[in-house]
Image (cartoon, rainbow, N blue to C red):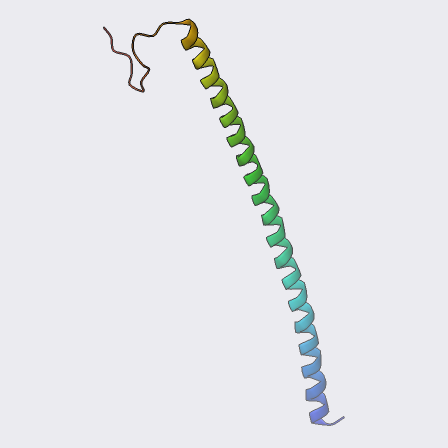
Length: 86
């Protein structure tokens, strides 16, 4: 076997092995990215559910506040300031 044939064979083997390793590396990388996407989707879904729950609770509290204002007399409008100690 000539030297040129040995070099060609060796180069072909190295190229083949590098290609196989590269494809497996890219597959593992893409699989990890997809897994991270699922985690992010779960986090977004949970955050959206929490926001919906908070909005529903706010609406319930506002409805209760309106009902209580109908039955009770309020001398001063509610504020965010703490009550004075008078």
